[in-house]
Image (tube, rainbow over all chains, first blue to last red):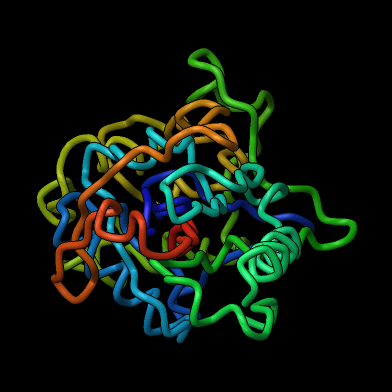
Length: 116
Length: 163
């Protein structure tokens, strides 16, 4: 789920520490303007999808950040929902709380519960 | 997705995206860049700032912006050259002199947030609670509703952004 851009050039810049830039030079291609329309947001999400090569669908949040608000998802977060639509796992808020290892554990438990 | 366990694939719908930033682990010895923001702290420059010198390397963001927007190559980007609206332009104009220039990316502005970093609270639906529904478009233009998956399979939601 693509949310609101975290570090656009006209937003909260990831600033330098000890002379090193944490993120982004024109050559690395990680410098982007904050999307102002759904089309721009979708284009950036598509670019991210191509860069990440994850092979999963990318949904794009609406410009009013409705899903971001509903899930308190900013800046990144993991959820697992059961088939009945209830929340099975609510991960912590990223980046520190973003824990793929916790997600893996939940999915393994669910697979065992459902008998694979 | 090295964490994806065996045998689970058929039971899951990988509904959504990941973040280039999301899986990032903090680099040892390097503080997280996030700055606690209050309305008062925004645009409050640190004291005793030194003026930029000619020896300073160009700020990558300033270099990015000049290459893309400084059409007349005069070392300044006007609002008209930028063309992405007043709010965005004002965020770039850190010293608020009405013109975006290298001065807005001088060391004195390092770490000074240009916009409030909104996070929409700490909550979200608790475990056991119903997941809020949504209908969104994908990067391929398809329309997907969370309700489409209800009663079918578990769903993993991965929230993030590019940077």
